[in-house]
Length: 343
Image (cartoon, rainbow, N blue to C red):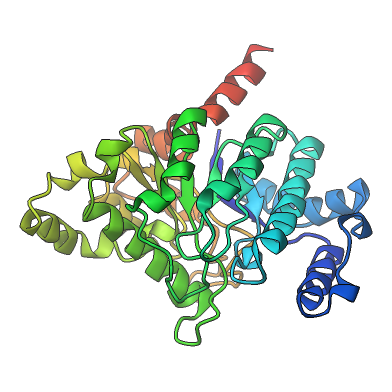
């Protein structure tokens, strides 16, 4: 089985964006704030949005199952207050759940949290629990910078985040560390802010002893880990200067990387530097980079091609990257698949 651990609902029906724009307008003028019931999206609309987009490409490119969460750039936790984020997260999570019920063989939900700048992360717990218990979510997306590029929150190693981590451990949930839209003109959302955040999150963990407090906590750092694999020697050296254990002992039992790297040399570097057990297959399609690479004639985000073309990986390595690691890092996914296999 080929499991894509990084999928977002980027092709949701237009009615969702229209409702969101109305909600944003309602922040300034309460008289135009929409009700949740005003958003009406039929199952047929959901089917069409998936069958003509993600599912079509999954079949064309040869992947089987996608871990599916709300669109990352639409999370926009910096907009409005906690009530705005809470309502928006609930709507987006329900849509991903509905997709998973319409296409249970192909999509499994991952939850967005209703984060808001300056608000205690424990306020996210009711939505997290609902998504696990009612929707069967197997993971969460955690935004280390709800401010949208201004980095006003404490680092991930701070006890500020511990209420979320405690629930992750309780429910065996990994978190993909994924920021949202940048509202800071210095940082392009997908070209800078995402990759900055990936690197920043890794360094926050490196300089701390977070995983001594939470030995079973698991973070998936997307986009190939940002700058991390490319600068692995720098991080090893910094850990040494800080009197930390070797990185394989200090971080690699808890931190994992996906394959959302959009050219062959990048994938080859990732798999040369990072142990196979720490790499999970992902494409993020349909996502940040949707075009065709003129050098290859293939879509940049058709990442399975790079795994297949790798001269570094064995067949056993590919099986780990495609399926084995995802089932180990996402225990609730493994349990779900075993239940299906037993039928």
